[in-house]
Amino acid sequence: MADDGDRSSQRRDGIVIGDDWQGYSLDLFNYPAHYSGDLDCVIIPHGVIMDRTERLARNIMDDLGNHDIVVLCVLKGGYQFSVDLVDRIKDLSCNSNRSIPMRVHFIRLKSYLNDQSTEDLHIVGAEDLSFLTGKNVLIVEAIIGTGKTMQTLLKHVEAFKPNMIKVAGLLVKRVTKISSWLPDYVGFEIPNRFVVGYALDYNEYFRDLNHICVISESGKLKYKI
Figure 1 (tube, rainbow, N blue to C red):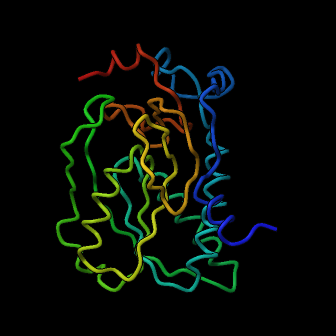
Figure 2: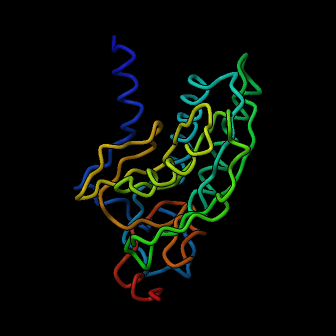
């Protein structure tokens, strides 16, 4: 039997999608017709996202059950994951001897121009987080690359002296300059490809996709600013 350290490591790693995974054919799924030609493949179907989100909710319940928490949702890309994760936690709280009273607050991070991350990070809605002092905080983010953006946010949140901070990331991208930092809860580890859908965007498009897909080069050109 694995010890607690082994289980923790497995929990943080998430489901690993290999670099050689070509994804599912778009023909197998429904998606908005206005994105025809703009996508290469479906890399994670919506149903798989939902199943993994339920498992993460159970892990969070195991770790934080009976703790009041403030869910800090990172907009805009994290809103769908946050909504679904909170819903799953609420369902578990209603059907368990343990419960997690939750408050939800929203902040926005912006550091991308087209498909490139920039050094210019804007944090909107996080100017005064003094209400986090002494609280247990769960930051919910859709996608994490090098981890630098999240580490910057963590330093900002830590300045308000919360009791505890945990981070749930739906996607962790394998990038060239990989960071040793990982969220406490990881949904999927994915190749270094630009993905859209499930509220992840490219210049504000593709948020209306249910699945997580790889954008095509023609899609990047079509919606480039």
